[in-house]
Image (spheres, rainbow, N blue to C red):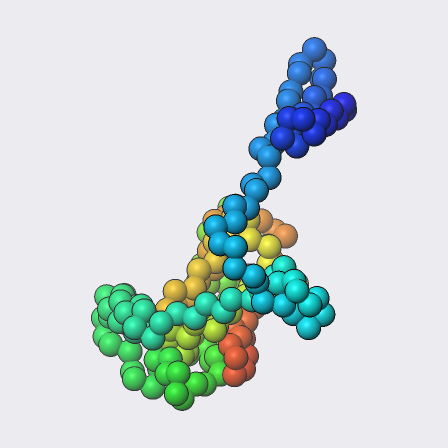
Length: 190
């Protein structure tokens, strides 16, 4: 591998590799240069008087109206899928937050043959909690999602589809839900 760099060509790097009479080149664009549009002096920090901080944290919070609109559309989807409205106590309420809890459990799949599809599903409360994190595990280890594994979590409806199973897919599968107030899990065997 030969690397040629030139400061005269706006910091571009040219990389050439030769493989059996083939030449491949990779070019990278120059880094963007900031343009100063104001000459106002930036505020100083305690550790660097006269200098502005290089990094800053800008919190981005969804507006309550946006969350209500999301929740309303999610409730409509729930009604379409389940045929009935969710109970008010099952919905996420910012004023009365509750720990994650599975309303239904995943079930054992013991009659599968090689190349069959596997489908786990369960329901999770509270519906619409934006802090809920859903994870899948196999035999206590995180399940690495790939071509055959299709996890989904949408407004309380949690699924894991395995497109086709092999003998090595046998084991205990666990779905773990965590939010800011607690954790719950459900497990089943293939």
